[in-house]
Every structure is written in C-alpha cells, then in structure tokens.
Image (tube, rainbow, N blue to C red):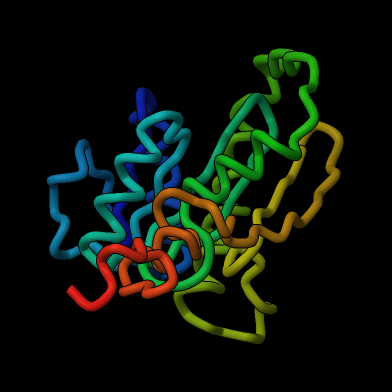
Length: 195
C-alpha cells in the first residue's frame, strides 16, 4: 500500500490518492507517520519541508522506502525514491539542493481558472512515475524517480531530470558516517597501542 502524507493540504492528498487508484495502486491518505506504518510499502510525502529530516530518519530506521514530492505553484519536483540502505537519503538531497539550486524569484500565482487542471496534471505525473517504480512495468518506460529528481514546470511545459547522488559527508548516510562505525587502528592514539 502507498501512504500519502501531505502537510496542510488534505484535498491535494485525496486527489493524489484518487490518481493512484486510477493506476490500480492501493493508496491511503494518512494524517501522521504513526498511522498505518506497518501496512505502508511506500510513503509519498508532499511538501515535507523541515519535516523531511524526521521522516528520513524514521523510514531509514524502519527499513522502508519513501518518495518526496515538492509542489510549488505549478512546478513539481518528484523523487528520488529514498531507500533505507542504498543510494542518497533526504539529507543528501537537501544538501545538494542548497549547494546547487539557483535562487529564483518567487513563482507567480497560478490563475484560478488553471489551478485545478495544473494540480490534476501534477497528480497524473506523480502517479505515473510511482506506478512505473512500483510495478516495474517497462512497457510504460523506466521510472525516472528511481535515482533522480524529476522536475516539471506545468506552466511552461518544461521538464528536467536531476541525478541525485549520495553526499560522502552526509551526517545520516555518508561514507564518513559509516566509516566511523568500524575500528580504525590508524586513528588510535599511539599511547593506546598495546594496552
């Protein structure tokens, strides 16, 4: 089952759940991380913001996958799917976005007459990518969100794929973090050798 958690927008969560059902995917809107955790195979979180770090740590601890979706006035950033033991984590994505994303001016409001259609297209794109990822149905093409972030601007109809790599110094999953879990004789002080 796919769990959908959308901060501060229950209507968007319900609409996304309906789009998943159109793809024959079982989906449920959840109110909190504690709800239905054992039943969820993939958690989709829309606009996680600072809450993303908490979700990242919880999902890694529980060994579950999750997908981050950022929805911002007609533009969607979806992916990558975060795995508990492989690939980058949410902290890696956050660090890379801070380092590489160009500050752009605030996006204009979507005209009211277009808002519902743009939101429907966003839900379709996210549901399609999730379907390709979950079903592994290659007739629909490979899922872009497996190891990349998909960016689509529905107002200009432009899209781009951004590879997301693990940050070696990531405090959650980086190489530095994993190395310190093992004994490192070269890091032992000389006075401790032989004691």
